[in-house]
Length: 403
Image 1 (cartoon, rainbow, N blue to C red):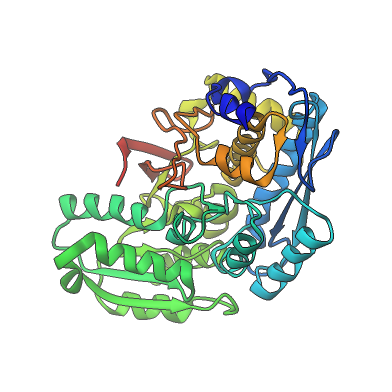
Image 2: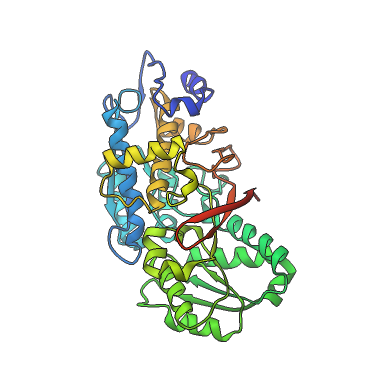
């Protein structure tokens, strides 16, 4: 473990870009980590109602293709097995168990969704398999005391709602709020986060809430209900196609409230374009990563590097889709952690290194935002910027805000 402690102190921002760590005299490998390969697993919604988010898994596969072409991590290639779960918890559990018990992966990485990650969390922690960087901002990914093998990645939904509520209480304290949310842990986190952030004003300000199921065809009836409430502020926490439908239907009904859109649905390519960009003008959301549609990054070296990677390793990917930035960043995070493991590629050391990220700066994160973890906090990203859609792209404003 002496080597593991030394590698923890190495500078992650440097190791991310290919500076190899010295090889140990004796390798300490676990199942899933051999002399030439590191096996990692995940499930993604390549089919089903959340399939637009599978762009993240495709981007992660493309980034690992780049890493492997450049020699891998400390001489080992990353083999990511990414299986379809259809965004259904039973299938996610079945596929994850296959990855662990049949394929012998070292870790589960980047599985998409709150319900799908929730159903595998206890299993992975019981097996002492690292559950690294689930895609989603549920608060349950940050419970080191009870689930020490689980590490979130993005800012949680409670923080996001706090950032919106601070803005609203300052700019429109007399607002009447309507909220659309998904009837699962994601939606309930958003609803609870908003009410908690509003504090004593919540009962007065939230005049209507409506939920939908992921099996619903549309959210038409919910938007009609919300409009009828007389609300002049709309929190659209719908996911993917449901968020797009809500934006479009609200405009068609002649309802033009101040609108907040969850950052997981802020993709110009997969949400705002189908909704109608002109209908989305003025919507406020939040972000921690550089949006590829924002012209301010045109001359940015990090953005140019991302474009070069897209052209070479992910040419079929949509360059307006923020999920292709998200997958690029999460993959870089895993590479950083694996590199600091050196030749001690065991679940214990992988967990230790994931718990010791200190001021890791990834090029496509927004200025001032870095990755940080410790024994009491398993979510590395804890800051957000507000942004507003101008009809063509997102524009950030204000400063980075945390809890």
